[in-house]
Image (cartoon, rainbow, N blue to C red; front, top):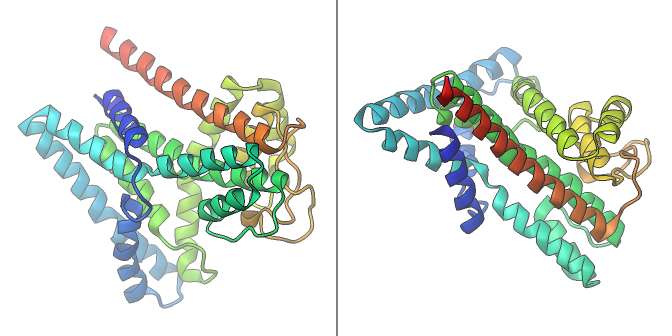
Amino acid sequence: MSLSALIAALLLEQLNALAERNYLPAWLSGYVGYFQHHFNSGAYHHGRTAWWLATLPSVIASIVLFWGLHRLHPILSWAFDVLVLYLCMGFGRYRQIYAGIQLALRGADMPGARSLLSQLRGVGADESGPEEIARLAIESTLMVALNRLFAVIVWFVVTSFLGLGGAAGVLFYCMSLAMPGESDDEFMSYARKMRTSLDWLPIRLTAATFAIVGNFEDTAYCWRSQASGWPDPEKGILLASAAGASGIRLGSGRSDAGSPELGVGSPELGVGNKSGAEALYCIDRLLKRSSVFILVTLFMLTLAGLLK
């Protein structure tokens, strides 16, 4: 049932990608904002309390609802999992923008490519050239793919395996995304810590998947030797493995101060030489192969369980 719920949600994403304002993490932002407003005293322990008070009721409610629906009829709990997955994924919208950037670069439509890049990243890109547009689009899309696709699948599978219902894991992860962890105060440091912790397993499973479906040796080399040099080493694992697996280069090639989120002052990742629209195509193919590999692996595990 878990595998069929994943497939159904992914198909819905392909057929009708939700707008940014409609998927569940956007709705959750107002909910977690309430706890931030009422508990933020700037203290670490208050941030920890607010995080769990915001998260646990939603997760427990989803577990109770899942099992209540399952007792009525298994198809109802299955539909609940599909709905939560569909509302939480949100990668389809970004995939469409990414495809638009590919087409714009191939047609030498620089204004169109810059406009789409701005939509993808939420930051202006008025002076970016074709190679920089491709690099920034790839880096942003890989992070979105982690947050809105691969990590969602991982936590769905984990909590399904534990018998808690996949929706509980998805909501737990999406709640961490909805927590505004960009602030530097002590109150939000716990939210940042939990987000990093919840990304730990998905990042490594995704990087391992890239190695299997791409160039294994280059992926392993980039993971070991380059990821730690990225300003955020955890994100460096994902980006370095993707660059190695697909034969492209990422990063600005500089280690001076800058914002890794904006692609400024970031060290070079990868050992290939593909750039521009060709690099965009390579990453697009890598993400598609990875998605298929994950579904096939889950299918084999499900089949093995049924044959016991």
